[in-house]
Image 1: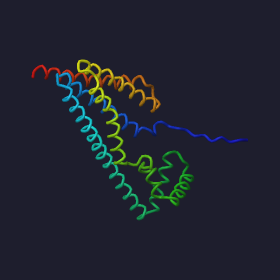
Image 2: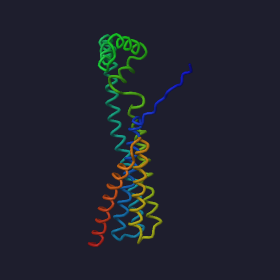
Image 3: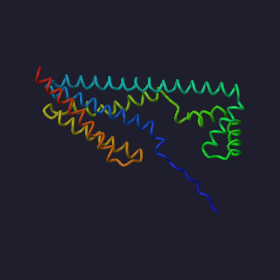
Image 4: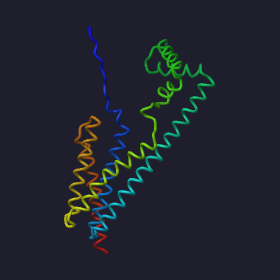
Length: 232
């Protein structure tokens, strides 16, 4: 009788990086396109529009990078403190920590004798790793990486912002606001579709959600730019 290996791929494991990627790209598209449309609607010339768009790209990318770095660094500090405390507890009272680990497995439905055996074997192999994974929910895959998060966030923001800047440089001024709106909404719809499909969800609601909020942001910014341009 032949045996075939069975490997399952769960899309929920992509949640962390997928959230950051979609958030960064979405913010890059919406904020940069909205700013370009607002400045263009005010009647400004192409040079002013390009300066505003470039400033939005650089400032937004740095803001996303700094925000992710600070946020994820706080998470990393908390994880390091928890691991240090767990290491101290293991050194101070290893028997109590073994019982605590076994109790976790019992609470999850494992028979007490089996739970005790598993806890003993995992403790002998790597006690801290066992407690980090099963008590603290810290693993190699979920551990906080501030620099990686900052770079990824800035890169995705830049990727989202670039189309708006390119359009600002190429589109004729009379078509700039409308062209930015159409292309940016198409980019948002594509982003929503990619995020949904990558996460294994139906794409229609994410696409509708991201395009609605993007359209609202662009309409409000363009409206304010037109009002201010008229007033000035």
